[in-house]
Image 1 (cartoon, helix red, strand yellow):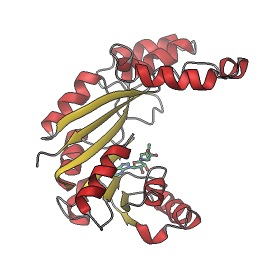
Image 2 (cartoon, protein in one colour):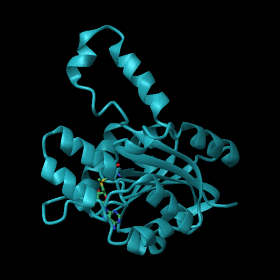
Image 3 (cartoon, helix red, strand yellow):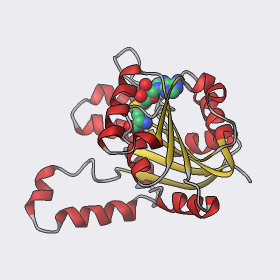
Length: 235
Ligand SMILES: C[S@@+](CC[C@H](N)C(=O)[O-])C[C@H]1O[C@@H](n2cnc3c(N)ncnc32)[C@H](O)[C@@H]1O
């Protein structure tokens, strides 16, 4: 989903590698494949355990020299990395867990180069309601639906908040970014039982095609498990 952005960054950089900053990058699920694809990646992440796994994963993939790990968090982001330097800044699975999503996104935006991109992937509050309802957890589904932040308060909900399309768009615009793409991830794929995929040859391809077609079409997009925004810092 970021290929076009990285190709454009590669063309802008000429002989240099595109620079990616992955904030809350965890153990490198995104960072390591991006390094393998030819990017210079910096991961800012508070968890030492996640960073240890990131180091191992980068070494196993043969790209330890392309991945820089920095222990820290969004509050101190601009003390840890240079402002306006990254071609692409990732905040995947991050805005749901930080203290203040608005401040965190403002820091991500400031770390992006003018004309650079910020990719944000977040959990969708309405998908969380549907998934609980389908699993028979009707009381939880109703509580999630009624909670302003889309959190299952009073439980061990690991997320502080979930987002909807309008709330996410407004957060991105408030951070001074221009929304270029807002699409759903996991519109239907998270709902289709595995038995359906095993039932016929070609079912997996058909599902992938359906998922792609639904990703940008409202209202299906609006109930995807995750919402993805690709936004641009004005140049
Ligand atoms: C759900 S994980 C996502 C990991 C990775 N981005 C991915 O998509 O696989 C959230 C990560 O954010 C990190 N995190 C939590 N609070 C943070 C903060 N204030 N600043 C930066 N990272 C934070 C957590 O330690 C965790 O690794």
